[in-house]
Length: 420
Ligand code: GLU
Image (cartoon, rainbow, N blue to C red; front, side):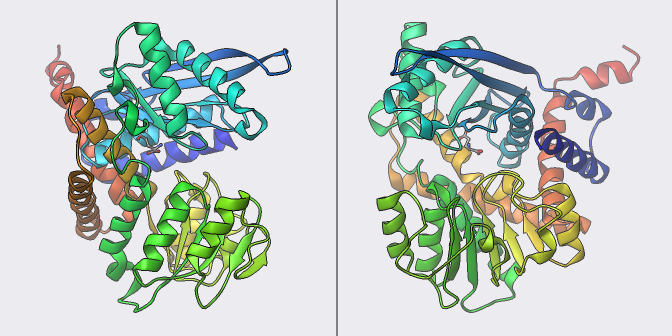
């Protein structure tokens, strides 16, 4: 599964290369990550036994700036998965024109099986193990699947202890009290909402009250459901790892969130009708919004989708094979590196504020986020029209041309083109 993920990423990269104006040197430099680290993290468990976990950090490319990307805690984390995600981060930061490269990290663990104290020891152990390869000018981690502000707080604190320096800009997505920024925890859904707002007429033909089905009801999925409902959308289905909840007339999102917050899952929700877990993907809807893990839409279920458009809030929720099926059936895809880029964009603001020793207001964050998301959304849409490309390819082409421009500006290509 994870090797397939890396193969998919490489294939999309090569597809995009055919449509982009790039130097051969840039393509060659993107073949392998700059640095991959695998570490062992021994953790003393509450019962006195010792357990060892595998941790990773990959810096894919840092031509445009320090590597940037989240840390995930999930049992499926492998070297191939982290490498793929770091590769995508390289494109995402270039697409948004942030002064960063791409990185990603993770620990193969099911955090639900650990007590809070065990999770803290694991996080601190992981931070110590990767301390040499992170830093405000080197590689800046942030939250990702199953990590949050609390985990980032432990990381920034541990890093300060190891380096004997207060360095808040080493981690973004921290608690406010430790230098975090207003709006970071809602940044992914806020950014996704802006992309959807800007492209709505293009992909949904001026529908009055479009329907949305959302797979994944964690931070991003649940907050986006609220934003869409407030904007007049009908949220007809939501799903998590326990169940799908449907109502063709639109769910009362506030009530669904109340149930999820109270019980930790959607199963047993008092509103809507309960269906099996994956039913959300094949519900009749206008927009399908996968906001969970990669690979949710694959060759076996892509043909059953009932949506006109898919907005990818998760990273890599559609496999390359499924992409082709959706292309044949006329389902439009708005790609992850654009739709979910709000998170890393607000991370950039946090990093800037930390380095300036400043605090930004929530209003400044919202205004600057809107400017970035709207600008790059229209750049991608215009490029898709100009070169007659699907939005995903256009997003990759746009990112690749920026990356290639930076690589070429280092001057080495010219040097060798002239025979050294
Ligand atoms: N994990 C998020 C992503 O995939 C945010 C990364 C960051 O803020 O650095 O984009």
